[in-house]
Length: 261
Image: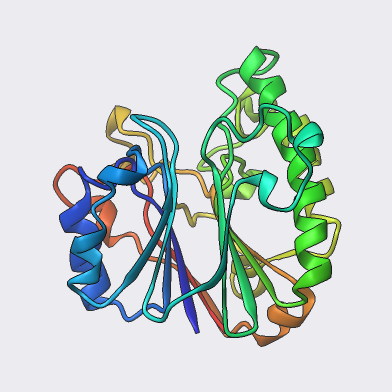
């Protein structure tokens, strides 16, 4: 099974990129983030036409996640509220950032984690609260589904080697010590980084800022991840980053990351 995560930064803007990529890359499930479209306007037919089932959870102009699958998925769940009580979730489902489904005996959880804007801001505190709830959510998922693939745009580079430079990174959003520690706490329930099973060195990135010609200079960050439960981690045979789509005309600032098991 191959599962890909890709923040497309507007599925309608990048529709041709995504459909062409799917026709040349035979993946079983493509997890999209930042689709930026309400459900009734999601371009599902474009994916049906090339043999994919589409499941989506979006909002206008912001956020949004989707699952595209060759085979029908079972038990589609949208938001934290699908398995956590409303009082605990509070307003953390107002932004559409969580969708999951089951293929075979694997539950695939697709996430778009908040960016946080700047350290100490209200959006930063929201990000930390969101991650705390994510830990509860994933612990319940793992209990019900021993084979769990959690993927998406995490908006966190776990280590300095996941960034083109470590200069001042303790003071930068997406690499602050608190964000990294909070992510490690989420993963402590029993999830491991699939990419690092196969590639230990730095210099591998999944996101390049549109500014400062960063893709050509390869000044990127690795913030798009697949985290696997122990049973699935043992079965993983590869995890790769496809940089080619980032070089297209009017690309997303992220590129696909694929795990195979």
